[in-house]
Length: 344
Image 1 (tube, rainbow, N blue to C red):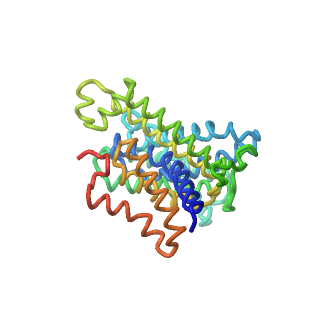
Image 2: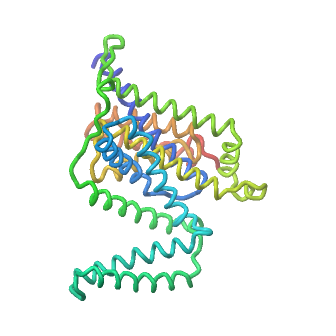
């Protein structure tokens, strides 16, 4: 193995770590601020790629797909957070949405079971009746806030993960797809006699840009101070007048935005296919566990560690590549359970 091998593998590991930073930093902030185990975070990555493909097909612009796909997924995340994770003031809408979903399922089951005819009138009647019944029931039930129960967080978010996965399969099909960046980014540059793909340089540049912008926002603005206060002690932050609900809404939308942006960027060399969400999710959690909840610096270090461990593990020890990938996480948990930059 010559020097060029080590340079190329290190570069690939850093570029992959840059992609994981986009996904993991949003998950880290959601953990740190909301204390919610969001197992649907990988679905935002997947939907970002699929929505970008639709935007590219409609407009022919890859550059336009970056912000539009990320903003679309951020809106999906915002609706999910407001209606199901933090539903204070939106109980009426939440109950109506859940009731409508159960009503549609009941109507579909009735039609497929041949209990009624397949006409639209019968389908609508069954849907409306079941929706009203469940809406009445849910309106009379006092629901405990989900942030007080980790098990409910896991069940709800993993349910959304499967829902998003099935929705993507129904809308875009099960074929593998690729996002093709502009031809200018498909070239290579020569550094010290080594050819480095320009697109991976672009990935590193995007991660650096967003990392610096996020750091400036978190460290130099009033909003960032409110976010850091919420991470440290949400109850005390509410006591001094900080609207922690608004902070949670902002952070959840930001996390979904970053994950979707990672899906658009990563779709050019990972591809977009069913199951990608559950492949990227453990890597994002490894980034958070290594770096610590709520720490952008920790997310950067964790993403770099995971990216390098994954790339060098596959190149040097393909038989035990999963061990080399998760070994740093196990080591950090043994030494410092809160992560490198996490707080007790």
